[in-house]
Length: 226
Length: 40
Length: 221
Image (cartoon, rainbow over all chains, first blue to last red; front, side):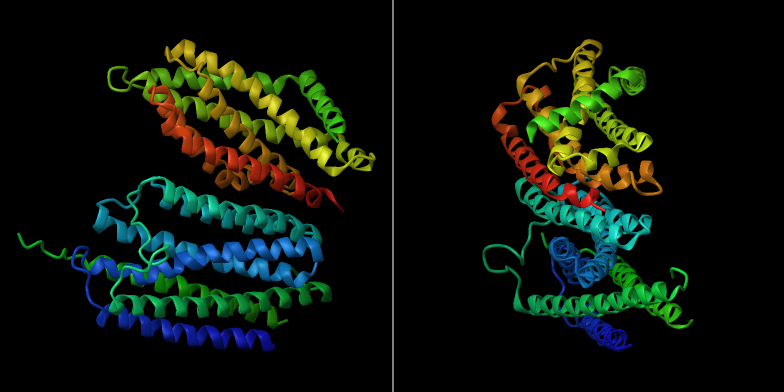
């Protein structure tokens, strides 16, 4: 299946590049004096977080257009983006506390950004559960679309909360209105990581999309729901 | 006066490993599920 | 459209009134929560004011979830939804009707609960800004909840799925409301909670509009 093969190749290349980023971040990027080595978690944590949120926005957009056009490709894409987003979100939620423990002294705090990232994860889980709970494909697509749109609309509120309420979580140093306040040696590594995560997102989504398509073929042929 | 850079390399390794496990794990999941769907 | 909405709401409320079980179970829950929280703490260590916001909001969210589960349950039991859909009324009216019915239910609980908290905890809760906060937050989660319950009621694990889906959408207005409540009960100036009030209001507007638009997608065949 062409799409599946393309997806696998893209993912493979992305994973290789990820290894490259790992090496670069761990061995060739300066250590941040105040935080120490743990700060390097930033190079994985932040790009994953960006894609965890972007994936949700994309789910929402695809869902919205789906409700207008009823094009099943959009539904397949939404399902794929949601699953991949969940994976990235899980990455954020695991690397975050591992970073937090040495820096803030605690694994978790009910601080705005952490709490709301947790809830982004719950939105994702809810979305996947809803999809799993509806057997009729048409209804599943419609319901998922409704939830996807709502999920996307939550994301700006999440951001607003972070900016409005002072928090333990570091304020954004890269994605903010003024220029990023990182030295180039670190910024370049971060940008590379962002690029790799982007590629990884694409690779994963393409594969997951192909998987949906394969399963649909199976269902129409009368095979069991995989 | 000189503030020591904290020694927390262990956490860094842990996080990098966990992230790798999740991403590789998902890659594997995708691969296996696709293979199962292709087989019949 | 509003007229139809009232008709739908009236029908729902009539059914609920006749059953009365839901209101009763929530009333029992309110008293239970109040008693447990009161006896479950060391009065010298934890003051009433510290506990009150949590109690308030635990009770109200429970009531909201209960109301939402009941509302569509009733529909499903009597297959009234099909009938409603055949009627020549706008889908938006159906949503509004259900929203109004759910809101009235939850508000009834709040109207009972709030004075009870004031009474048992000796906390001044009958404050206008607090009422506003409660109103805004309630509209927020009932609006989203009414939309979601239309979907979950058609699934296999309806009662489990609704709270799971709703949780992240409730938490957002809830955290704002609780923080505002804490400050209001501590007699902080209004200016401190203005931000939260704004967020709650915007949230309500956005999600109400969204729910109205999306509702028909949850009930079309």
